[in-house]
Image 1 (cartoon, rainbow, N blue to C red):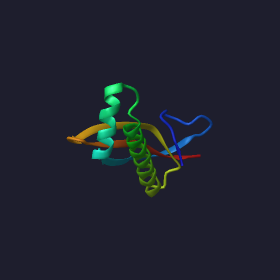
Image 2 (cartoon, helix red, strand yellow):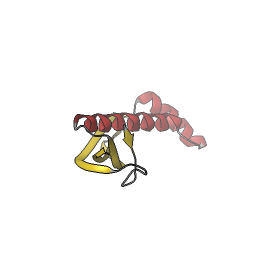
Image 3 (cartoon, rainbow, N blue to C red):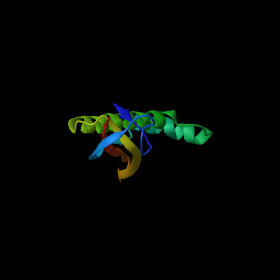
Image 4 (cartoon, rainbow, N blue to C red):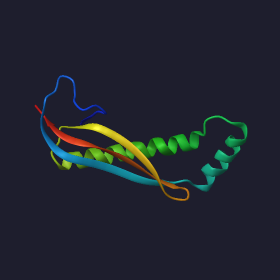
Length: 104
């Protein structure tokens, strides 16, 4: 299924708007990652353990958003956006959302 951050899809005509779709996941840090992150914080540079954690969370949120769109019978999702928020100390939600549409 197509998903884009724009309002439309070049070369495609949107024939119906089916509604907002979303997918989210809440991920928590773990002690192993925190220990490595603490060491990296001393020397500087990318904290790859957290980069991977967020990348995995983003992919899961996208997949859940697309599953939500499929349940509505959508052909695509437009205006896709991402949001993160801290749920509690050491845990954050990754949210993907957009508008499910039918295409001609």
